Image (cartoon, rainbow, N blue to C red; front, side, top):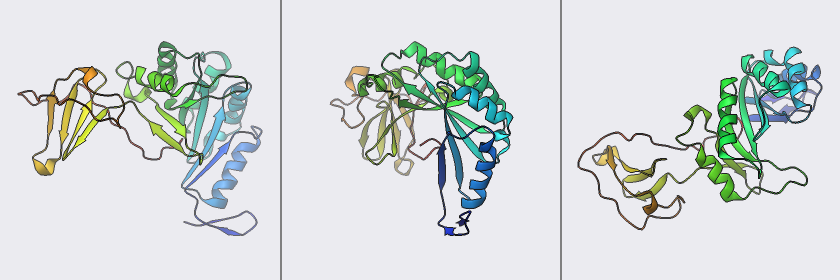
Length: 260
């Protein structure tokens, strides 16, 4: 798929075109339409910071017709601990009811708590904006969030909220590309099977169907398996005598999402 620059210069195919909100509300719908016609990207996305006056600008842009731009994704940035009331709540409610494909990115700070994060993630989902990513929020003068604390916050949502309200923790690599981090649910890779630990600390094996596969449940102490997926377990759990489906299993995908 080839696009053409507004000046008439052919450009190579664009897989994803991402813009940071910075235009006036009246300019955005026309700008999105021009970009789609010029570059014909497979995915067109605009990231919107709802801190400060961002919520009011989003309301204005939706009223000006931003929601009618075909195939546009909009990522709303909110800080952890943000109350989904007032202007922020109105903007997110209008976004959730618009035709746009919307998702939320939660910016984590040093003062965030598991309870506040759970309330925010569920609140976003109830407004029609699915939370997809947890990102370390950086602001001048703010202390950075330690990696261990960020992982603990992400893990705190497991087993507490619907899978639809469980965002992925991501970190930017030196090239500025986002990499997903998940708590260690893959406990061990061994031959044709994978040992998986669920959020309750129980383990089960997922076997290769080509070698008589299936899902075998087994019990194991949560302390016997490392939370680090790169650290092999030092003990082997005994399989139970019966085969059943696990109460809950978690899997992760590193596929590109609209906010990766």
